[in-house]
Length: 225
Image 1 (cartoon, rainbow, N blue to C red):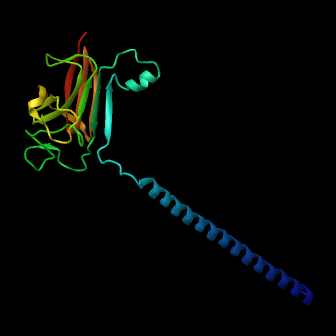
Image 2 (cartoon, rainbow, N blue to C red; image 1 turned 90 degrees about the vertical axis):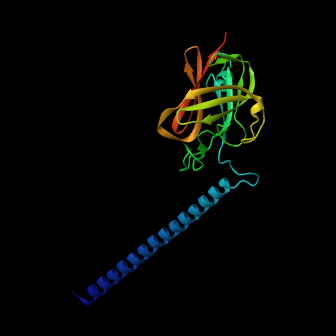
């Protein structure tokens, strides 16, 4: 190989090295930019999430309020002109969570001790409204609003309808009790993390199913013609 050819070869090798170096620098620059974008996006996402969680006026309640109807989803049925069955009942209640606590049992170590009044929920007293006369355990219940609470036992719940409306917590005036009945306790499988009330269809009426943790009860409600 001549001197000229050798020099040309060296020039080409040198150019290849410089080109490879430039390509490497270019790739590193792109990776660096993308990393900065990812960090920025993550930061913005975190800030956005924080802004969603933060409310300058009030915090979300730990026991959210819920409302159930019979017939089920009555407002949606009415909106879609599917309310061929008249509205019978509505329950307004707040839904506490189990959060690893012991719910029903004997003694004050339990959240809802046997033999003591429980408001069937949290926060404001649970209310049931009947839009027509009904019958529960053979007793006629006139249409109207009632506070509803219970006294849990191992084998039964005593369900109470009370006329002391718009009360908070356990401030129950038993002199205004309107009706009491016992319903048997059944096993709930799997356990319910959130206290839940829902109407279920039954022959001649409906059942108000109430469940939390590993127990449930059903209050039979008969519709009067």
